[in-house]
Image (cartoon, rainbow, N blue to C red; front, side, top):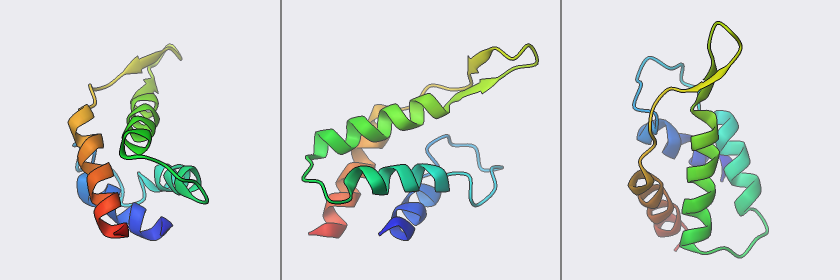
Length: 90
């Protein structure tokens, strides 16, 4: 299932920056898999978790070691990810 989540994230490209390496989202896939594994969750739980996970990942260090947000994340994209996740499971 973790590999499926990796593939879903790679196709989605939530940061909409196609120059990232193929494995850019793999750490997120692991976190999502661990969140969903052995757990009864709702669509909203998954969408909110993915949104927070990716939102936190949007912060990068600038040259002064301060974190800056590089882009706004679309909550609708997280909803679509959750929809796809549950569609595949059913």
